[in-house]
Length: 66
Image 1 (spheres, rainbow, N blue to C red):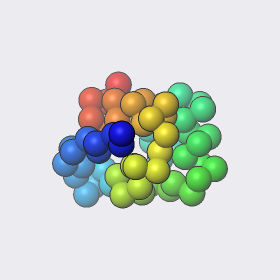
Image 2: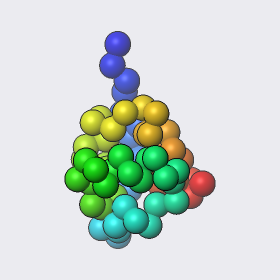
Image 3: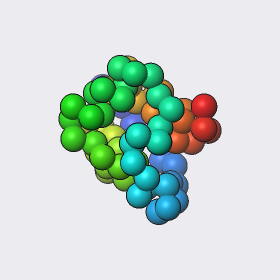
């Protein structure tokens, strides 16, 4: 059973930001760096490639700033 992507309109200004602006766990940031994610837009485009163990932390920050 595949997970459905969360649909959330991310403003273009936010999509252009570096992943380094994310306040996520160290392990999550390492995963993103090691797998070639550079911007929030990369995360949005390739979200289905990100393991669920990291995805929740990223979504919480992008959608709610937490």
